[in-house]
Image (cartoon, rainbow, N blue to C red; front, side, top):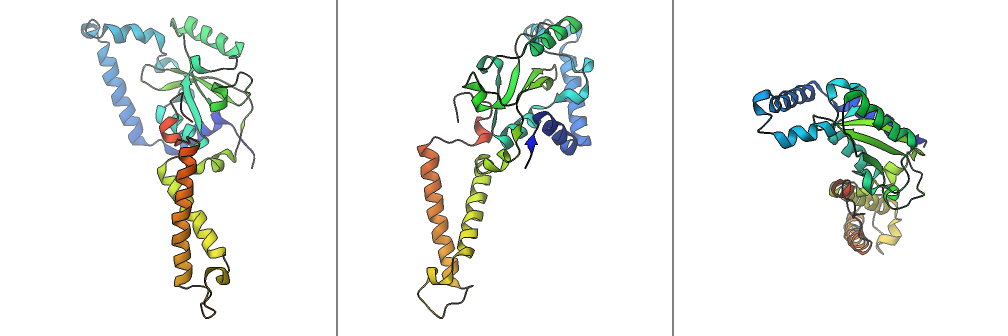
Length: 241
């Protein structure tokens, strides 16, 4: 397997999953958001109006660089990444990234101060981590504009490595598949002392269910012992996994 560029993965996911219905929903949200800033409603939503200077207006941006939170979460869960405020990020953020922020502030008359970063957990704990990181700035429609990407691309097999920990369903499926492979691989003589037993018999089915119970028990033990959490629940939380 080769390397996985997070930016390419995001683009591929967006092009693959976005449908016409998504566009309609997005447009409806934009209309509602714009209505909040109608002249008569500015005073009623003054706090929201003030924060609008800290986000980018999507109408001014390249739509190819804008991603929804759901798309970012999908990639974060798939590759077991974190999506956190840049304040938690340990390695120094490249000068080019900060220059891009200053450029955006000047061009669109904004006051963008913070980034959100998509990166492996190590990048939020180790100042010397060099894994790929992707920086985003929030937009006025609660989406995210991709500002800058740098670092070593991730190994494609990272997806497979953390497949079981994506969520509860993938963990169960993984355990069942592994148990099934073991059960069908065992010679009949190791399953039963009955010399008349055929390969496909009740003995093999019984062995499968016994192994399944054992594997579930071992998995639960190690999950709690090493405090492993599902990627789908901790992708945007700093203190977990």
